[in-house]
Length: 611
Picture 1 (tube, rainbow, N blue to C red):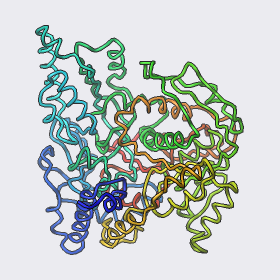
Picture 2 (picture 1 turned 180 degrees about the vertical axis):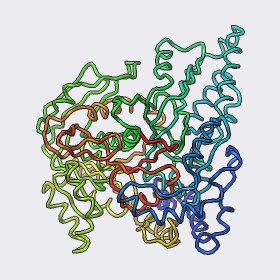
Picture 3 (picture 1 turned 120 degrees about the horizontal axis):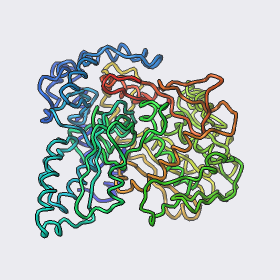
Picture 4 (picture 1 turned 135 degrees about the vertical axis):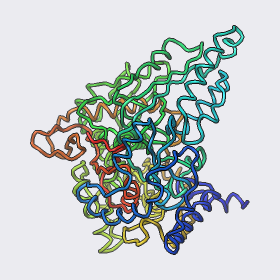
């Protein structure tokens, strides 16, 4: 063990991963590269056995074939959203469905895209997030539900066993007064929903999970792991685990979903699947039949991240009313429908779980890095709705400039063009685009490449909000000949970049009146009730028509494509631009998002179904 000072360099590594996890990740990824480069026939030996996997998987011996197809089809997919040939096809999904089996993408250990395996689970098994396991363990201690540890072996859970154990526990609880008394606990009930997933989205964090550099995944799950946060699908089963102490309000919440409901929401990992077990308070009914599964799956993680970032930035303060036990919050409809970007007056809704407070500062400027990405596209639109101006967006490629402008950026800085002239001109352009005293809010997911400069360009009382470290991560420009595997040199750069991370002096922060704030939603399992009113706000914006006739915000049709027709409805917040791929193209999806070429969101269609 080194000193705290020595350890701090590597503790600041991507996502805050610990030293041991970083070392394990780097070794695992370099081994993957070496085997792929020199002895590809040995790749199957890098794939750990997963006990929950069904025998005779159709995709077990076809990794190399899939990788070759992905290389050939990548450019076609980028251009048209088409599909690459695949060994694991719709017929295989149909066979799995007939047998009641879940198909998922599992990662056996840190490594390259060879670890992304589409597998079929044994009958009765579904995927789940890490908080499901935690909740079952808590309920086990409070109400004698036995063997919950065995029920949920990391990312998988056997639903029939869970139901059987609950039924046995219910009989024991009601059999004697002693058992009824011992069941009394703060954990009085659980409401779990089995969702048949038809679409899930890809986030850059998923690549970090595969590399072994995502702290919450390492801390709460380990390997094997099924990545993914966003889901959309149909309720297949509702499991209400209640104790004798459950209140009437709790019982009402437990029954809010029914079989056949179209839902979307978040899972704390486990979303790369056709079937997942998710707590009911992490799901919501899709509010409009016109919204496709692909559209719904593209929304949760990026929109919640964007709105919480704006909350930290001071642009969207809110108060959660803890005295209200009803989590079905209502938002001030007038505020959402008639919001005026130039109106700085206070708007308070005393009957809501959210109090929105108009900012009093004269400087309402915001700088958004990666403005055309998943989170960035939401940040731009929300900033416009909340009256921030000027909205200055930074994009990494010239091809993304028009998208950033259409989202609502007042000024777009093109790093690709600026770098061709002179790397120093980027920040000169940023200075010229904003107020002379600096920016009120800067949103930075980049890490070492921009953090210090972002901090330096804040105005007094300005806030730097950090929610990623993309530039710290190994990069793939798409020219790699190793099918998505990264050169060991890139991993050495990861260590160097971590040492170069800026350190902000608290004394300077006080005297300059600047703040640095950071967060990671994957740790928010105990903050679901806080996120509920944020969901309400996001849905309201998505469904509310804008009072402006500007064409900068276009709606999406059910295929998830832009609808630029004259009759297209404009909303305060539009769904992200979507590129759809089939689930078996997961390796291609990771390579695309790793390359930085994507615009908007990548959404995987699970089980061959398209709406």
